[in-house]
Image (cartoon, rainbow, N blue to C red; front, side, top):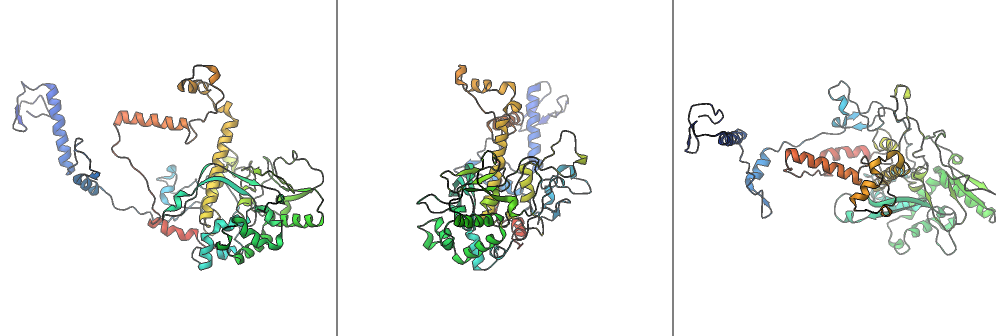
Length: 499
């Protein structure tokens, strides 16, 4: 009898056993049929995979047969080459596999993670002035390499604002590439024009206070104990200071404030760094000094300038700068933006809205802005890619701003985002609260917020449902990135060109 055909009258022997049709039950026939099919699959695969009862790990080592099987099924090394495809709208470089799914199989390759199909249009950055152009060069001389190794310290010497964040420095203890990691919230703060009595000048105060010893004051502002052995070179500090005094509009305005303090010591005035509100005209090209900052003399009301950054002559408090202010990044990273270029601004409209769909977004988001800036475009300088560890810090800063604004939107739109069963009741019951007074007021993070509790629970339930149908996973796959991959090495020269 053929076990695959129980109605057959032909006898069939397996393992020295004979089965007759009169003595073979349907249950036993199914078991035999399954066993025969399993043996055929193993024979056709030509492999000796261990059974589910064979231990894969023994004393911390893989079974040799299992390792041979994995090696036999390992494909040749994949190689994608350099990014050689360009967006037809903004000329950003991509790999072929980064194209959008709808363009697969079509004549033209389409990308939209850079400019959203031409809807985001921002003018290119200007070439860097000297001496920054010669110093910010990875393949330069010893001076350039030393400058790039300490570029964060040099930027801190000229920053107008201070950055507050919990920085995790343990990741840089090894021999890997430099990593900039923050935990928690990040914020930029700005002080007054003059330091308080008995306090040393810091940040923007260095542009105003005791400028006759400005170079030494800046070097000693990092750390009075480490300054004598600091890798900071006074000649480079002097040259960069002259560069910012010539090209940076904020430095120019603080120099004017210094002169006015000398001439009119008893006069009250403030410096107003102009912000932007929805509906203001967009100006991403080169602004003048008065477009970015101005002196306000005499009576003034802080409520009138609530959208602006107000810098008083002397003040104990540090003022936090909104991440929506156009000068947010330029004040913190003067070496990345030596011309004081404007950053993200609310209310910027998309380009080409004639063919837009109904109820679609019409204004640029902060993520749209930074996605456009982070992509490399041939022939254009990019401060977010060309300054090593300082560019990494700026990108982490920008990502933190995006997350902060998303959370702020969720906080201010709870009535729009909440469903009835999420208004604290189901959450309180899941925590074991039976008294209404214990519920309090909660902020609901929707499941669409990546990393939130509901996002994690929803994905966990999806994974459990998949395991219920297909069984538990056999492998825990991890994805790594090696800085020595050929694709990365071949692409690095694109990001390190002089512009």
